[in-house]
Each structure stands twice: as C-alpha cells, then as structure tokens.
Image 1 (cartoon, helix red, strand yellow):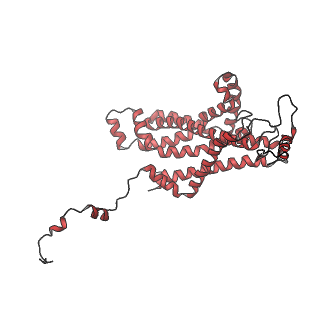
Image 2: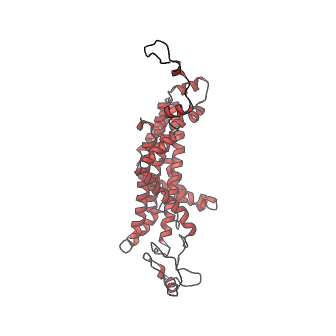
Length: 352
C-alpha cells in the first residue's frame, strides 16, 4: 500500500535496529590512542626533531658497535713493540697514510686496514680514539642527566607538595647555589675532588672508572640539580590543588604515596623533556673540563681531551681539533633540537 506522506502515524520502519553493515557505513570510529602515541605522531611530523633523533641514534650505535670489530685500540701505540726500538714512522700519520712496516706489507701485496683519521703524536689510531671519546661523552651526559633527574625530582616534589617552611628552606638553599659562579665552582670542585678521591678509591672497583670521572658526577650531583628541582616544584604546586589530590588526602593517603602515584606521573612529560635538554649541557660541561685536564683519566679519551691534545700540533694537524669539535657540535645541536621537538610534541599546554 502507498503511504500518505501527510499521515500522522509514525513510520515504525525508521526505528528498526541498524544492521552491522549499516553501522560500519554510517559510523566512522577513530582508533583508540594514548598520550604517548599521540606525542610520537607529533614528534614524527616534526622533521627537524626526527632527523636529529636519527643522527643521535647513528652516533650512539657507532660508538658502541664500531670498537667491536675495529682492528686498532684507543690506547695501543702502533710503533711500539716489546724488545724493539720505537718505530717513529707511525707517529703523526695523516689520514690514510701508513707506517713503515705497514707500507712494506702493502708493497708485498698484503691488505692493511687504513688509518681513516691518521694517528696522533703517540702513534695511536685517531679514528678509534674519536669513537671512544664520543662513547665517553655520551655516557657522561646520560648518567649525569639521570643523577640530576633523581635529585631534582626528589627535592622539587618534597618542596612543592609540603610547601610552607619546608618549601622556604629548600628554595633559599637553591637560591644560594644559583648565586655561586657556575663555571668557577665546577672547576674548583673538580680540581679538589680529583686530589681527594684518588687515595680513597685506590685498590677498589672504582679505580677503573677514575677519580676524574667520579668527581665529575659528584659535581653534577652538587650543582646541576637546582634547575630540575625548581621546574618540578612549580609543576607540583599547580597539581597539588587538583580534586584527585584532595580526594586522596581526605581518604588518609600519605604524602609519599600521593607524590609517587599522582603528582609525579602527571608531570612526567615535563620531566622527560627537561632530562633530554639536560644531556647536551652535561656533555658540554664534560668537554670543557676534559679540555682543561679535569675530565677523564688518560689514556681514556673524551672529545674534550682530544681537542686539548690537538692544540700542541694545531698548525701542522688542524684536523685533529676540527674533528672532535664537529662531533661535539653535532651531538649538542642534535640533542637540543630533539629536546625542543619533545617539548612541542609532549607538552599538553602547547597542543591545546
């Protein structure tokens, strides 16, 4: 029967349940996602930050994997053999040059692995020393940022949550550290700790690390946590008045539980971003301390100590200074750009 369009009766066919095919056609569901996934997608779209991350990844993997198959060691002097006079032909080789013995092997038809960056004044392969120096600088930057993160998170969260006199005392202490001349205190502490720690770690497992490296970590633990503490304190101050914190307090939850379960997880994005930006600062500090002779213990190289050693032959071998300087600049620049990309991707205030 033909229906009258002016009829007042309800068309019951319009209220029949939709089939699965009709639901699939009509409803366009957005796939479920998380805060981390959305941040990674935004980070991937930031081409500068993504390329910087790839550069950091390549440099880090190279510093870890290349020494495993490289035929030369960072401390082996190629022209020195027990019971024989020193072969000075291995000293100060230019890139892709060979010593007297190696050249004889090449003339005899043998294959000799090249010295890509030449050798230094002691006859050590310069390429592998740059690789090891990169490994040391990256390791120092990573562990120093972890130390700064732990101390700054602990002090900043306690200061921000409890407030009052506790906050006043901690912040005045932070102001005192901020008022100290940063570079002068770093140099003085490194020089004093270097002499103090040497007899204390003699004969222990820490002796292999070296007093200079340990003093460097102590300097970071004493001076460089204040910025992280202030940042986390500000985040905690804004979060502690939220309803879920008041609800936890009303149920009798202790401050430690509230900090670890509610406050720190809600400011973790800011913590990660600040930690990423702290790594280049730590690498730069280690580099100039090694440049001044207060960094890693010889013969272990770092990028700063390599640049310092290159000053002796600057006019004759300028590339020995240029190479570690370029590597330091590339690492610091890439880490800074990657940290900026993390901030743009994971900071909720910038994505509203």
